[in-house]
Length: 182
Image (cartoon, rainbow, N blue to C red; front, side, top):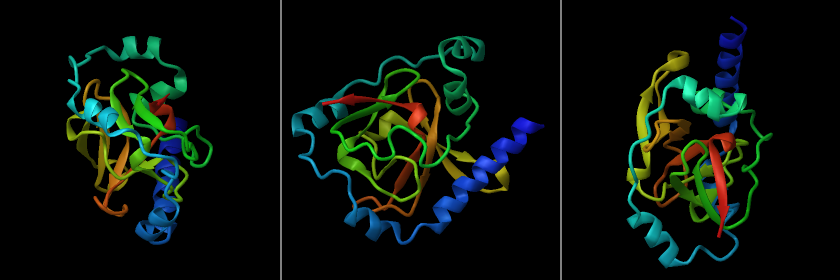
């Protein structure tokens, strides 16, 4: 019961943080984190063209043995880490964000922006084939969950209040990601 209560509180906190943010499009454009030179075009093209690889299928027990308790909670049980207390929200280094469970490259620093929500946010994945979007009807509402297309791990959610050019905000859990500096 305590776990369910914590999950509900975490979800409500995330919703509150998202609802309280000012116009995220204007904020994102004025506080973009891509202040450094963007990744070279050939790197982004290579990531776009790269094959996804075989789908990874493991039992939950196998995942439990490979992941830390916190990683398992977020990646496999669709939990959420605390806002503003995570590794990549303020990360300004150039590079690629990959799935912490399987290494699938999903987002680049070029599409990262400061949404003000306390979680790392991006306006687009490297390629649509890298992420999977599914309806999430938990907590009595409908949201769009973002999963790794290779291993099915929960990465975060996507909302329609992001900056141009997509208008999307992929609000992700740092613990669900690893970062490869480029």
